Image 1 (cartoon, helix red, strand yellow):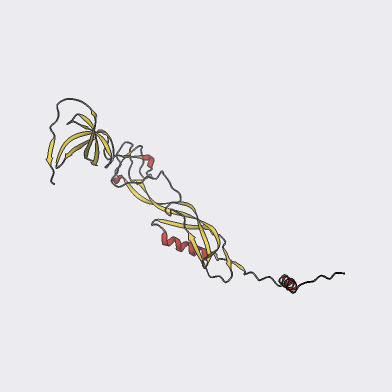
Image 2: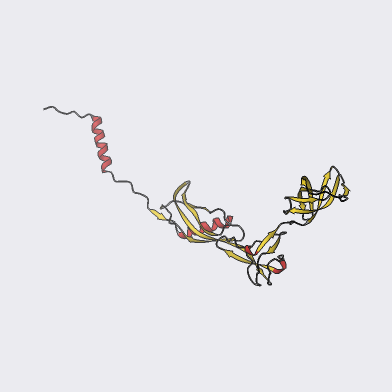
Length: 259
Protein backbone atom coordinates (compact mmCIF):
# COMPACT_ATOMS: atom_id res chain seq x y z
CA UNK A 1 0.00 0.00 0.00
CA UNK A 2 1.30 3.43 -0.97
CA UNK A 3 1.63 5.95 1.82
CA UNK A 4 0.45 9.53 1.19
CA UNK A 5 2.98 12.11 2.20
CA UNK A 6 1.78 15.32 3.86
CA UNK A 7 4.22 18.18 3.99
CA UNK A 8 4.78 20.25 7.11
CA UNK A 9 3.31 23.27 5.33
CA UNK A 10 0.15 21.31 4.55
CA UNK A 11 -0.21 20.24 8.19
CA UNK A 12 0.17 23.88 9.32
CA UNK A 13 -2.61 24.97 6.94
CA UNK A 14 -4.94 22.24 8.22
CA UNK A 15 -4.40 23.26 11.83
CA UNK A 16 -4.91 26.96 11.03
CA UNK A 17 -8.27 26.28 9.33
CA UNK A 18 -9.36 24.10 12.24
CA UNK A 19 -8.43 26.80 14.74
CA UNK A 20 -10.47 29.44 12.86
CA UNK A 21 -13.49 27.14 12.68
CA UNK A 22 -13.45 26.49 16.40
CA UNK A 23 -12.71 30.10 17.51
CA UNK A 24 -15.71 32.04 18.93
CA UNK A 25 -17.17 34.81 16.71
CA UNK A 26 -16.33 38.38 17.80
CA UNK A 27 -19.09 40.00 19.82
CA UNK A 28 -21.13 42.67 17.92
CA UNK A 29 -21.68 46.06 19.57
CA UNK A 30 -25.23 46.52 20.82
CA UNK A 31 -27.37 48.88 18.73
CA UNK A 32 -29.32 51.50 20.65
CA UNK A 33 -31.93 54.07 19.57
CA UNK A 34 -31.41 57.82 19.75
CA UNK A 35 -33.71 59.37 22.35
CA UNK A 36 -36.67 61.18 20.71
CA UNK A 37 -35.97 64.27 22.85
CA UNK A 38 -32.49 64.47 21.30
CA UNK A 39 -34.01 64.41 17.77
CA UNK A 40 -36.56 67.02 18.74
CA UNK A 41 -33.90 69.29 20.24
CA UNK A 42 -31.78 69.00 17.08
CA UNK A 43 -34.71 70.02 14.85
CA UNK A 44 -35.72 72.94 17.06
CA UNK A 45 -32.13 74.18 17.25
CA UNK A 46 -31.70 74.02 13.46
CA UNK A 47 -35.02 75.83 12.95
CA UNK A 48 -34.10 78.65 15.35
CA UNK A 49 -30.88 79.28 13.43
CA UNK A 50 -32.55 79.63 10.02
CA UNK A 51 -36.25 80.36 10.60
CA UNK A 52 -37.58 83.42 8.74
CA UNK A 53 -39.55 86.03 10.64
CA UNK A 54 -43.23 85.19 10.90
CA UNK A 55 -42.85 81.42 10.42
CA UNK A 56 -43.16 78.50 12.87
CA UNK A 57 -42.50 74.78 12.61
CA UNK A 58 -44.52 72.14 14.49
CA UNK A 59 -42.94 68.65 14.65
CA UNK A 60 -45.45 65.93 13.83
CA UNK A 61 -43.43 62.67 13.47
CA UNK A 62 -39.90 61.54 14.29
CA UNK A 63 -37.87 58.65 12.85
CA UNK A 64 -36.11 55.95 14.88
CA UNK A 65 -32.35 56.29 14.48
CA UNK A 66 -29.85 53.73 15.82
CA UNK A 67 -26.16 53.75 16.65
CA UNK A 68 -23.65 51.48 18.36
CA UNK A 69 -23.74 51.62 22.14
CA UNK A 70 -20.91 53.81 23.36
CA UNK A 71 -20.66 55.91 20.20
CA UNK A 72 -20.30 59.66 20.58
CA UNK A 73 -22.96 60.88 18.18
CA UNK A 74 -24.29 64.08 16.61
CA UNK A 75 -27.61 64.68 14.83
CA UNK A 76 -27.56 66.56 11.52
CA UNK A 77 -30.80 68.17 10.29
CA UNK A 78 -31.57 69.01 6.65
CA UNK A 79 -34.42 71.53 6.80
CA UNK A 80 -36.92 71.81 3.92
CA UNK A 81 -36.53 74.59 1.37
CA UNK A 82 -37.99 77.17 1.24
CA UNK A 83 -38.69 77.79 4.93
CA UNK A 84 -41.41 80.40 4.38
CA UNK A 85 -43.74 78.17 2.33
CA UNK A 86 -46.65 77.04 4.53
CA UNK A 87 -47.74 73.41 4.56
CA UNK A 88 -46.77 69.91 5.66
CA UNK A 89 -43.04 69.37 5.11
CA UNK A 90 -40.51 66.55 5.38
CA UNK A 91 -36.92 66.88 6.64
CA UNK A 92 -33.97 64.48 6.85
CA UNK A 93 -32.22 63.54 10.09
CA UNK A 94 -28.81 61.85 10.10
CA UNK A 95 -27.12 60.21 13.09
CA UNK A 96 -23.37 60.65 12.80
CA UNK A 97 -20.58 58.97 14.77
CA UNK A 98 -17.54 61.08 14.06
CA UNK A 99 -17.46 61.53 10.28
CA UNK A 100 -19.51 58.39 9.60
CA UNK A 101 -23.32 58.46 9.16
CA UNK A 102 -24.64 55.40 10.98
CA UNK A 103 -28.38 55.90 10.40
CA UNK A 104 -30.73 58.24 8.61
CA UNK A 105 -34.50 58.86 8.62
CA UNK A 106 -37.31 61.28 7.81
CA UNK A 107 -39.24 63.55 10.18
CA UNK A 108 -42.34 65.52 9.27
CA UNK A 109 -43.96 68.69 10.50
CA UNK A 110 -46.10 71.71 9.66
CA UNK A 111 -44.78 75.12 8.66
CA UNK A 112 -47.13 77.98 9.50
CA UNK A 113 -46.61 81.46 8.09
CA UNK A 114 -48.10 84.69 9.41
CA UNK A 115 -49.72 86.70 6.63
CA UNK A 116 -51.75 89.92 6.87
CA UNK A 117 -55.31 89.89 5.55
CA UNK A 118 -57.33 93.02 4.91
CA UNK A 119 -60.74 93.58 6.50
CA UNK A 120 -63.29 96.04 5.09
CA UNK A 121 -64.16 98.67 7.72
CA UNK A 122 -67.22 99.81 5.75
CA UNK A 123 -69.37 98.58 2.88
CA UNK A 124 -67.40 98.68 -0.39
CA UNK A 125 -69.14 98.94 -3.76
CA UNK A 126 -68.09 97.42 -7.07
CA UNK A 127 -66.42 99.94 -9.39
CA UNK A 128 -65.10 102.12 -6.58
CA UNK A 129 -61.42 102.91 -6.16
CA UNK A 130 -60.09 101.03 -3.15
CA UNK A 131 -59.11 103.41 -0.37
CA UNK A 132 -56.65 102.29 2.28
CA UNK A 133 -58.81 104.15 4.80
CA UNK A 134 -61.64 101.67 4.12
CA UNK A 135 -59.61 98.57 5.08
CA UNK A 136 -57.43 97.49 8.00
CA UNK A 137 -54.88 94.66 8.38
CA UNK A 138 -55.22 91.58 10.59
CA UNK A 139 -52.65 88.81 11.04
CA UNK A 140 -53.62 85.27 10.06
CA UNK A 141 -51.58 82.06 10.37
CA UNK A 142 -51.57 80.02 7.17
CA UNK A 143 -50.99 76.25 6.96
CA UNK A 144 -51.10 76.27 3.17
CA UNK A 145 -50.58 78.78 0.37
CA UNK A 146 -53.78 80.61 -0.52
CA UNK A 147 -53.87 82.50 -3.82
CA UNK A 148 -57.18 84.10 -2.82
CA UNK A 149 -55.54 86.31 -0.20
CA UNK A 150 -55.30 89.95 -1.25
CA UNK A 151 -51.79 91.39 -0.85
CA UNK A 152 -51.71 95.19 -0.81
CA UNK A 153 -48.69 96.57 -2.69
CA UNK A 154 -47.53 99.97 -1.49
CA UNK A 155 -48.00 102.69 -4.08
CA UNK A 156 -50.38 100.62 -6.23
CA UNK A 157 -53.98 101.55 -7.03
CA UNK A 158 -56.91 99.14 -7.04
CA UNK A 159 -60.55 99.11 -8.11
CA UNK A 160 -63.25 96.91 -6.60
CA UNK A 161 -64.73 94.33 -8.95
CA UNK A 162 -67.66 93.42 -6.67
CA UNK A 163 -69.40 94.52 -3.48
CA UNK A 164 -67.67 93.73 -0.19
CA UNK A 165 -69.66 94.10 3.06
CA UNK A 166 -68.17 95.69 6.14
CA UNK A 167 -66.20 93.19 8.27
CA UNK A 168 -65.46 90.82 5.36
CA UNK A 169 -61.94 89.68 4.45
CA UNK A 170 -60.87 91.21 1.15
CA UNK A 171 -60.05 88.59 -1.48
CA UNK A 172 -57.85 88.88 -4.57
CA UNK A 173 -61.03 88.24 -6.57
CA UNK A 174 -62.65 91.37 -5.07
CA UNK A 175 -60.23 93.84 -6.64
CA UNK A 176 -58.19 94.49 -9.76
CA UNK A 177 -54.88 96.33 -9.82
CA UNK A 178 -54.84 99.49 -11.91
CA UNK A 179 -51.82 100.48 -14.02
CA UNK A 180 -49.95 103.68 -13.18
CA UNK A 181 -51.54 105.30 -16.23
CA UNK A 182 -54.69 104.10 -17.98
CA UNK A 183 -55.94 104.52 -21.53
CA UNK A 184 -57.29 108.06 -21.91
CA UNK A 185 -55.03 109.58 -19.25
CA UNK A 186 -53.20 112.81 -20.06
CA UNK A 187 -49.40 112.88 -19.67
CA UNK A 188 -46.62 115.32 -20.44
CA UNK A 189 -44.68 113.94 -23.41
CA UNK A 190 -41.04 115.03 -23.33
CA UNK A 191 -38.72 114.95 -26.35
CA UNK A 192 -35.04 115.53 -25.58
CA UNK A 193 -32.28 116.70 -27.93
CA UNK A 194 -29.02 117.43 -26.20
CA UNK A 195 -29.58 120.03 -23.49
CA UNK A 196 -32.98 121.05 -24.85
CA UNK A 197 -36.33 119.47 -24.14
CA UNK A 198 -39.67 119.95 -25.88
CA UNK A 199 -42.81 119.19 -23.88
CA UNK A 200 -46.32 118.65 -25.18
CA UNK A 201 -49.47 117.22 -23.64
CA UNK A 202 -50.52 113.83 -25.03
CA UNK A 203 -53.26 111.30 -24.45
CA UNK A 204 -52.34 107.73 -23.46
CA UNK A 205 -53.46 105.03 -25.94
CA UNK A 206 -51.89 102.01 -24.20
CA UNK A 207 -51.75 101.81 -20.42
CA UNK A 208 -48.72 100.77 -18.39
CA UNK A 209 -46.66 101.12 -15.23
CA UNK A 210 -43.67 103.34 -14.52
CA UNK A 211 -40.76 102.05 -16.61
CA UNK A 212 -43.03 100.50 -19.25
CA UNK A 213 -43.21 101.57 -22.90
CA UNK A 214 -46.66 103.01 -23.58
CA UNK A 215 -48.41 104.51 -26.63
CA UNK A 216 -49.20 108.23 -26.63
CA UNK A 217 -50.85 110.54 -29.14
CA UNK A 218 -48.35 113.27 -29.98
CA UNK A 219 -50.39 116.30 -31.10
CA UNK A 220 -47.22 118.13 -32.10
CA UNK A 221 -46.41 115.70 -34.92
CA UNK A 222 -49.89 114.18 -35.29
CA UNK A 223 -48.42 110.74 -34.68
CA UNK A 224 -48.88 107.85 -32.30
CA UNK A 225 -45.55 107.42 -30.50
CA UNK A 226 -43.77 105.02 -28.20
CA UNK A 227 -42.78 106.61 -24.90
CA UNK A 228 -41.23 105.41 -21.67
CA UNK A 229 -43.34 106.22 -18.63
CA UNK A 230 -41.12 108.15 -16.21
CA UNK A 231 -43.81 108.70 -13.58
CA UNK A 232 -47.60 108.80 -13.45
CA UNK A 233 -47.63 112.19 -15.23
CA UNK A 234 -44.59 112.14 -17.51
CA UNK A 235 -43.48 110.04 -20.50
CA UNK A 236 -40.27 110.35 -22.51
CA UNK A 237 -40.50 110.10 -26.32
CA UNK A 238 -38.83 107.03 -27.86
CA UNK A 239 -40.03 106.72 -31.47
CA UNK A 240 -43.06 107.46 -33.69
CA UNK A 241 -45.39 104.61 -34.61
CA UNK A 242 -47.74 105.96 -37.30
CA UNK A 243 -49.32 109.10 -38.72
CA UNK A 244 -52.60 109.78 -36.92
CA UNK A 245 -54.14 112.95 -38.32
CA UNK A 246 -53.46 116.32 -39.96
CA UNK A 247 -54.33 119.83 -38.89
CA UNK A 248 -52.89 122.80 -37.12
CA UNK A 249 -50.01 121.84 -34.93
CA UNK A 250 -50.07 123.02 -31.32
CA UNK A 251 -47.23 125.19 -30.06
CA UNK A 252 -44.80 123.15 -27.95
CA UNK A 253 -43.27 124.27 -24.68
CA UNK A 254 -39.47 124.34 -25.00
CA UNK A 255 -37.26 124.35 -21.95
CA UNK A 256 -33.49 124.61 -21.65
CA UNK A 257 -32.05 121.85 -19.48
CA UNK A 258 -29.18 122.65 -17.19
CA UNK A 259 -26.05 120.65 -18.17
